Image 1 (tube, rainbow, N blue to C red):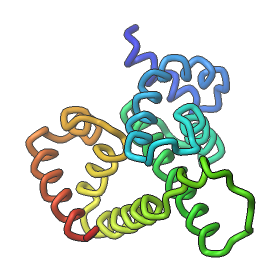
Image 2: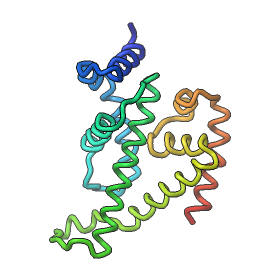
Image 3: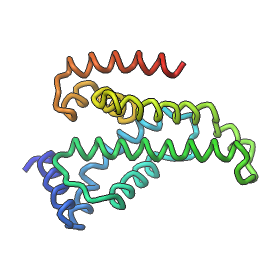
Length: 185
């Protein structure tokens, strides 16, 4: 059995309540999860307090703690992990902004202060709001942005995940990118 089918089989076993399937699954998907997390962290400011391993762990914990999912494929799994990573980063950005607006005062070293970028946090929250708005009118474009921007997937990988052609993904990506750029400015 090749690795792709084994991952799908383990996901399906996990969704049926087999806890051992999850422990077998994690080593098989670890490299891809690291790729996803690194792509997300590359979009964050340098020296972000979250590290790739912490981002992966938090995303996986949210999947485990969330409602049971009827896994159909590894692509569905990677797509949901990418979405959970996005949620983790957005929640972190919101906490940073809340603290800056007069939340609980705490001591911050000079080295740490430069890591706290309000502007980057605002941009991330604005992007999340725009994606939520876009998903209401055009779910495909929103998913493409999420997979490309937050997941770090190539056009070909997104086409495979969404079960559509690369030409469709390229066309929708171009439109969605220009829409996002207009809305962000």
